[in-house]
Image 1 (cartoon, one colour):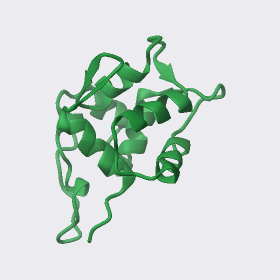
Image 2 (cartoon, rainbow, N blue to C red):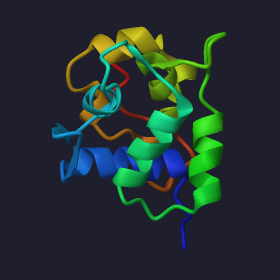
Image 3 (cartoon, one colour):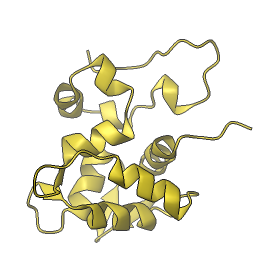
Length: 130
């Protein structure tokens, strides 16, 4: 059985369109971020990310969620911006494209990438926003 990477499970849950956080429908990373950024500061803290992930009812252990949260880059104040969240949820994308370019292209964060599923040939392909 293929054990999905925690980030892949989060991406799949977001794409399902079956979640509402803070009264907002969550369908991708920008809508997830907006839902957990309740003060509309443009940054969130680890507790907000953790709380949002728990509301997605993922099939992840507490330790897996914690590892994902602490892997996110923070600024000196411990804040996480949407780009850092996207890098944590799409770790392979950061090697392929500038994440900010990827975030600004409509549909990219709702389009499944080949590494969202078990590899068949070892090759990675997908829409990288280029």
